[in-house]
Length: 120
Image 1 (tube, rainbow, N blue to C red):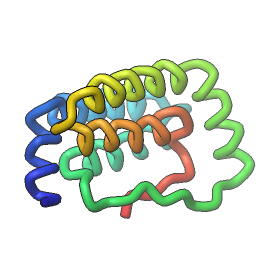
Image 2: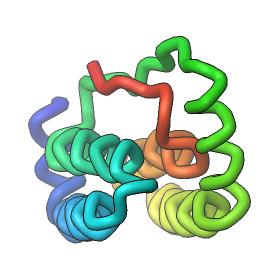
Image 3: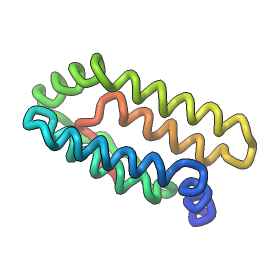
Image 4: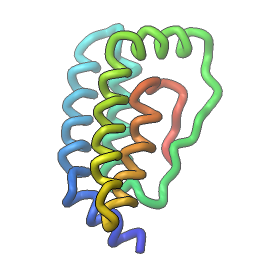
């Protein structure tokens, strides 16, 4: 069932979201200040290629990570949070794409504060 869900995920937006996440990660890595967030976006991109059956696990962060997360959330994170949340709502309206929509909610949680998470 997970395999079918992951295939539906890739067809109905997951592939485009993963590629976009890799591009965002590359752009963030070009700057020295946002390099750690760019690395997290590469991890997120790999997660987005096959997300069903995987978890986003919160790991303890340092004070510096928390400060960077707050600054990131104020300037960029809320935009991505709303984007992923809106896509999740639209996909959950259809019955067959509810698992795909729930994955977008999982990604939205990460999008607002990217540092301090690991993908298992």
